[in-house]
Amino acid sequence: MKNLPIILNIILFALVAHLYYLNLKKPQQADQQSIIAPSSASGGARIAYVNGDTLDAQYEWLKQQKKLFSNVCATRKAALPPNRRP
Image 1 (cartoon, rainbow, N blue to C red):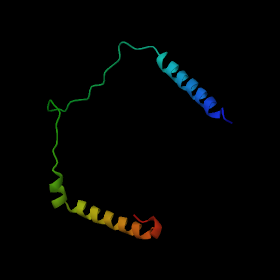
Image 2: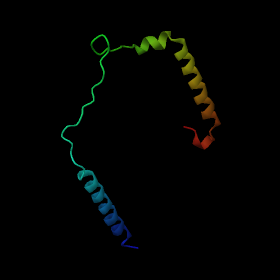
Image 3: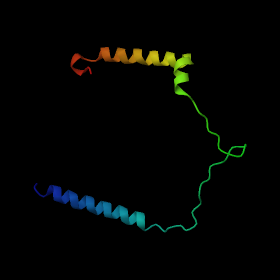
Image 4: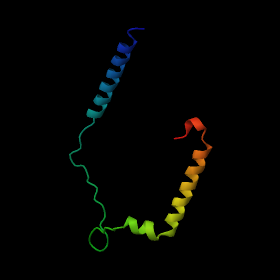
């Protein structure tokens, strides 16, 4: 049983060497196609900026979801046994 770790290491080394061999024996393709993302119809990429503070302050659905999430967390914390509570 003292030789078990050595035997396992040898087997793992052989498996890793085999994986390297399988990976490197694939022929390298010289004419690989590159993937180009389609541009928008206006001729370029469009970037949208969203101000998270404004969403927090004025978006009612987000406020309701935060409140619901807080209630669910509080309920689940209360349901935990006393020795498992954070």
